[in-house]
Amino acid sequence: MKWHSLSVTAAKNLAFEKIYNSYSPFYVATAIYLLAFITACFGWIGLHQLWNRVSSSLIILGLGWQITGLIFRVIISGRPPVTNLYSSALFVSMGMVILMLIVERITKLGIGNVVASLGALLALIWAWTMTIVDGDTFTVMVAVLDTQFWLSTHVICISLGYSATFAAGMLGFAYLIGLLVTPAFATVQRRRSFVNLIYGIVCFGLFFKFLWNRFRRSLG
Image 1 (cartoon, rainbow, N blue to C red):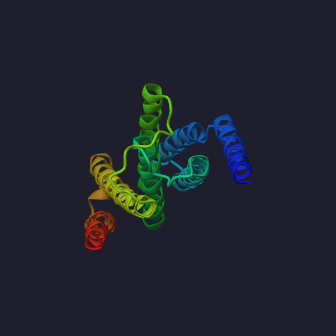
Image 2 (cartoon, rainbow, N blue to C red):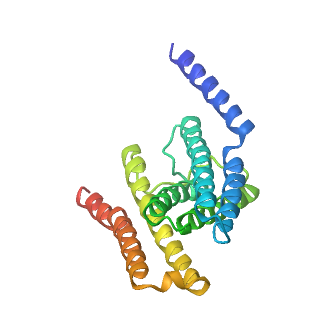
Image 3 (cartoon, rainbow, N blue to C red):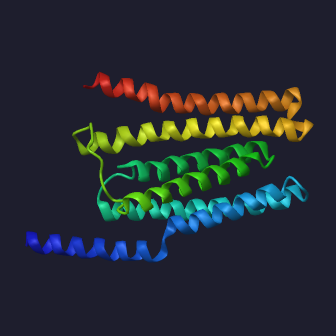
């Protein structure tokens, strides 16, 4: 009975892996993010609201493909979504995209779309370069944490902190570029708005990186 259940599980995992390899969700997401970045850039030229809506829709579509790919990886490996450097790039960029969609919802300036699409595009391209070197993306690094519980909770929380750090850095850099491109970013109200956004994202990241790490250590 035990061998039968193992063979059934292996067959299901093989079926999921076949679908995963056939659809290549992260390659599709990369193409969608590239298109989203192009349309977001068009929003700076003209028809601002129209292009931003198109870009936001494409980013959500790309995010859906990215999340689907991560779910398939969890099912196939039977492990948490973050187990090695490749999966870290996928998960951290996913969190960054979600944060930037929230920023875009608040600001409605198109800068959230630009940062989300460009950041995710660069992260996925970087992840793709790792597949050229290593080939197998399902390899698991030797974990410092010796339990499945801490591997599932601690690593994911720390990765969310990295997502926030990535998002805050990209948003700050994009704001500086915006100051050079258009005087609209130089107003006191706009500057205060972006400072508050970046500060909030940094606090979010510190919670997951620093406070969670202290909490885990207090539990031993």
